[in-house]
Image (tube, rainbow, N blue to C red):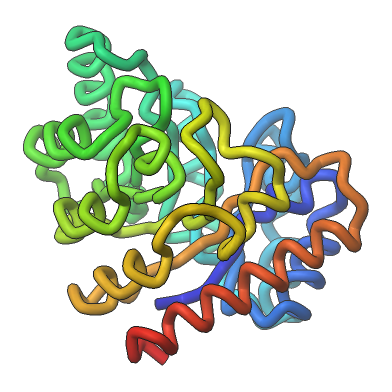
Length: 265
């Protein structure tokens, strides 16, 4: 597994600061944030002028470009994201599921949309991933399994985030085991309690919450998962650089310990 982090953790700083800090913390790679309002790192409206700089930063800081997070399923915006990813060399785009929990029609619409976007992803040689998300149409293991059954495209995969599964009232270790054959990306963070949101950024740091992340990573390793394990900490845009760097470094140490505990490193 490749240890990475979403640049959204450093959403209050420029892109080079995110690369520099993650490299200093010992990460293998980076997930580029294209999340409006949370960061201005990969601004899709001007991706052409950013492409060469992103490639330079990847080389200079020896960080692989593991993925991009772009939440919207809008076809035009997603095609722009696919074009950017293909040019820059980003293999995976993670998007949101959309819709609302408990609404079968909403779930059907999300599945149809994701199916069409997966076909578009295939044309660009990109893998599209989606994760269960609190409050959305895909929010737990049963709804994730429905998506897996409905979309067979090899350009589609599951992105698993234990914090959302935890807040859906499920055991993330059991949940990852149920869907691991189609998992192509993992967002990882901890979580205290079962509230709607993931909590304060520092409480999302791996090892700070209630989730059995060692068991979670063990299931991935035992099933041969070799993709990205990307830390995703949200809500830190107003944090100081020291605060963000501490969260990144602490989480990277915990991720490494998880891999060592299950024999993956």
